[in-house]
Image (tube, rainbow, N blue to C red):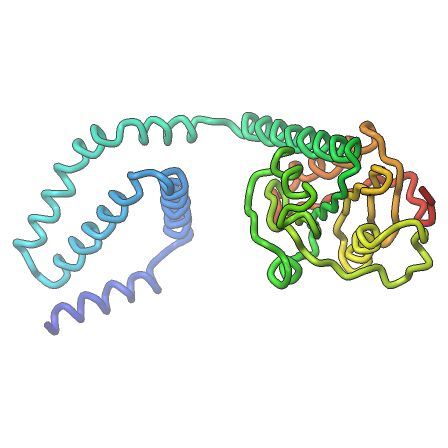
Length: 289
C-alpha cells in the first residue's frame, strides 16, 4: 500500500513541477477535443458509451497504480480490442462528427446569417399579423443587462426557438400567457407572461397609451433592453428604447430595427456578449396615436 501512495505522490508532483508550456498547450488541445466530442454526442446514444469508456480508462489507470495486474490486463484488452467494435457500432455518429469538424468558419458564419434573417422574418410576420388583427403584443429583447430577475419572479418559462406561430399563439386573447411580456434572449424565447414595471415618468408618454406601452417604456428606463409593442386599440407598432418611444413602425421600419439587432449580434459572441442596437432615428417619446 505504501508503494501505491508513493506512486500517487510522484504523479501529482510531476503534474505540478514538470510541465512546460508545450505540455499546457497539449492539455488545452486535448480538453478542447474532448469538449467538442461531448458536444457532438450529447444528445445521442454514443454519449453513454463515451461515459462507460471513460470509466474503463480511469479504472485501468487506477488498477495499474495499485498493482492489480489481472484486472489491468482485462481492462486494457477491452480498450485495445473495443475500438474497432465501437467504430462499427457508431459509424453514423462518427460520420456526423467528421462532417462537423470539416465545416469551415465561413459556413458557420453563413449559417448564423441565415438564422438571423429567419428570426427577422418570423418576428416581422408575427407583429404585422397581430397589428392587422389588432391583437396586443409586448416583446422584450434582452441585451447586455440581464432580465433574469423578471423571468424568474413573474414569467412562465418557454425556452423555445423563435417562431411566428408560437408568438402569435402566446399573444392570442383569452389564452393563459397572453397578458404580459415575452422575453427574448438572443435566438430563444425565454419566458412569457412576464410582469414589467411601468414607466416612472408618465408625462413622457401620451395619455392615449395604455399599460402595455408604459410597461414597455418602463423596462427600457432601467435596462438596455429593446421593446416592440403592438397596440390592441389601433394596431400601431411601436419601439421602446432608452426610456423613449418610437411609434408608427411599418414593415420596412420593423425589419430595419430587427436587422440592426440580429445582424449586429452575429458579428460578436452569440448571446453572452452580444450588443443589440435599436433604430437611431425617429425617437420622439411624446408622439400621439
